[in-house]
Image 1 (cartoon, chains in turn green, purple):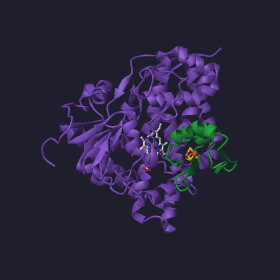
Image 2: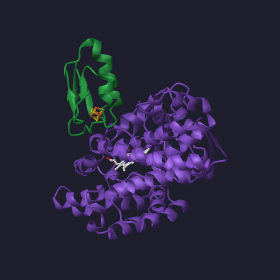
Image 3: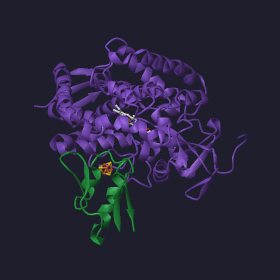
Length: 63
Length: 394
Ligand code: HEM
Ligand code: SF4
């Protein structure tokens, strides 16, 4: 599974990074960086939570 | 379309005084009846369950905003071109101009100033002991912040709030309330058209809109509608959230004790206030094609009310949804909408809400409130007055 950010929609709320800190991080500039696009099985639940909390639907999962 | 379309329908009045005072039984009936219920009085469908509302908001290709988000043709025509009533690609151009100034990154540098303003407002009110939590607190705060950020000149400002309230109510169903509100929406637009770009504070969010037009990023005609988005969306919404917070904490002092004991609960508490009392009750979408909602068919062209306020109390999604619980942290509530049109100002709204709750949590041990006066508006829900006495923290 991969986690994909639509950069044109992401506005940097960072809720996703709180939900999946191993996969996503908000840098000091307030920009979202993807730490790992590949989602390991034990991170799947966090990845789903990240997708769920993004207020502008900028994240999706691809299997 | 004439007659009643196939499918579940309810002869429900959501806009009577009683319903606007307590809309939740009506929402319950809609949720209990079907994923989408036809309301013949408004020639519109209503969607009230969390999963369906969220899915529709996330699918703008099937559920369009471009034919307006209200329940009458006049308002839908008057709001054409406003960001809230656009689809991509037009939407995204407008959104970029706002996001450049409203995204969390863009408002980071406002934090210290907004926190200071919250302290300066709350401190004398607590010293005074008694105040109106709507007029003196909830209204005073966003008005000063948002109108300063937009950079509006001082004269004319006193009218802005009444116009903003009406700009929402004007999108209700045809009838006397809508007729009364509509001229005020027009007054707001006329006032904003009369403001010259060089009257707006240099560097302000308002000025940035005109700069974007000058740079060719958006059309000149988009400036006034974008200004209107700031002035309308940025006021009553946050105002209601703040007064609702005081009202809920007054009635549930144990919840206030939790927040006072642990200020890290403040963001979750603000989310919970928004969940249980969504300031914006609904906006509409129009189906662009025949769609299925949880197995139920809606014909292309159907207008559908997205009942954020109902979704936020859907028992399918939330445990004990009518209970106010600051430890719930309902991050995925729908009070800000969701998806492409998800509130562009939510970073600012949160900053304002957290600052006020923080300033109160440091100073107030107990809120005691008298009888709240409800403000009747067809789209937004909140109070018009809340007599409040506080017991200061020792
Ligand atoms: C607690 C306070 C607030 C609440 C509950 C709220 C609620 C909402 C909701 C429900 C929408 C979704 C519209 C849709 O689905 O069609 C929205 C959109 C919007 N809000 Fe807010 N809002 C708040 C504060 C603010 C503030 C402070 C601003 C700006 C200063 C703002 C600006 C906007 C704008 C520009 C949109 C349109 C976004 C778009 O169409 O892409 N809001 N808001
Ligand atoms: S929650 Fe959404 S908007 Fe916010 S940083 Fe993550 S992807 Fe971007």
